[in-house]
Image (cartoon, rainbow, N blue to C red):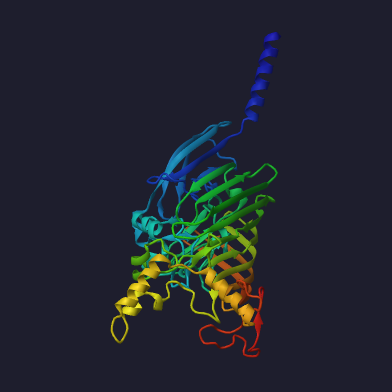
Amino acid sequence: MKKSLFIFLFGLISSFSVLAQETVVKGSVKDAVTDEAIPDVTIAIEGTELKEQTDGFGQFVFKSAVPFGEQMLKISKSGFLPKRYPIVVNEGQTLNIQDMTLEVDKGSQSDLFTITLSDDELNDDTGGSDNISGLLSSSKDVFQRTAAFEFSSSFFRVRGLDSDNGTVLINGIEMNKFDTGRPQWSNWGGLNDVVRNQEFTSGLKPSTYNFGGVLGSTNIITRASSYREGGRITYSSSNRSYTNRLMASYASGLMEDGWAYTIMAGRRWGNEGYQDATLYDSNSFFASVEKKINEKHSINFTSIYAPNRRGKSSANTQEVYDLKGIKYNEYWGYLDGEKKNSRIKEVEEPILMLNHFWDISDKTSLNTNIGYQFGKIGNSRLDYPGGANPSPAYYQDLPSYALGDPDGPDYGAAYVAEQNFINNGQIDWDRIFDANLTNNISGNYAAYSLYEDRTDDKQWTFNSILTSEINENIILNASLNYKKLKSENFAEIIDLLGSTNGVLNVDSFSNSPFDENNPDAVAFEGD
């Protein structure tokens, strides 16, 4: 009787142990050459309808029950050669298949492309580039990846095309600007850890989200459930655009109650980068919250706020480089013993978006998104309606101007200009303030002022994207898009530089009034 009771209890305990153990199949996929994690790889179990995708860290977990016994895993992604892995699934055990690899499909290398994510845009008013910052490049070609990182889009462009020929999206919402057609990368600058999960489509190939451009499309995925659980703190030091960078992020992963959240904060700063007086001051904040309602519906809210200020660097001629070196920047001068840059770019455009994901069936899904972006972009510069051009590199003040005199080269004037430029060659803020103070006494308007070219935008975006796999050879994508933009463009006085009489609202070159209906208008700070 005791033996029977013992056998019964042993069998009962064993049964509970088996029931308590969960059968789990998980793993990771990485690039066979670079050893980097590959996101959005499809993991399928052949002979079943079970499929999962890797997250931003290349990890996957099968959430549905996997059949026991010998199975075949198929891993695949566009641009890579697919692979098959035999596995054995045992009941009540965890099968952890780490570091499966995929190799690049060499046959697709005719469609190689480069995506550059730069904090620094080419600027129309300088005719050149601002500070060259770090880049995030994605390409299957070693040369293109290296060229994109080392030279950036300022000096190297695929097929000579600018970035307005490529489309950038976040969760399916297009981020390219209406006026320039280019994305404003600094709107999410400093958030490297949460914008790594991206889907690339090269050239004019079909995209799940939109038609894209001739340089392809990039969709940045910020779903909270797509981030691997855990935290990260990163510190970096550089001598390019900024001196220091500090980032901290944390992701909860998908929790048992169906909620997931990811947060991140970052800061980049420096008194100057590689070129003189190129200050950098940037803060970045990110939050994404997702609620998985059931197996078919999920809602995600994302907010991005990345205000940044940076001092610009000038585009210089060879003559200027020969006299002052490659670090020279004409936009600054000493004021009260400190370097003051006259050209500051300030970007402050928060992004809010709400996304609904509906898995209608195993082969059909609907993604509906609404986004709102608002804020300002400002570029400051000196105006001189009542004074001489304050630029220290003004062409008439350089040696070449005297040497190119139609009556013959004036070597004496060229030597004086050369020595003056070498020994000084920066904005004379003291002279500018003195000119305005003198005009105050005489009752005249300001000879100089500091103003900002402003663009204030408010944009609503709505789209709904349907994806349906009709059969193994046909995939249908349909999209409905709507945008509404209100853009205000103007110049605003930010500093009268010692003047109390205001500045006459006229063009400094032609002396014609900006407002023909009010030709004698006087502007003060804030106007």
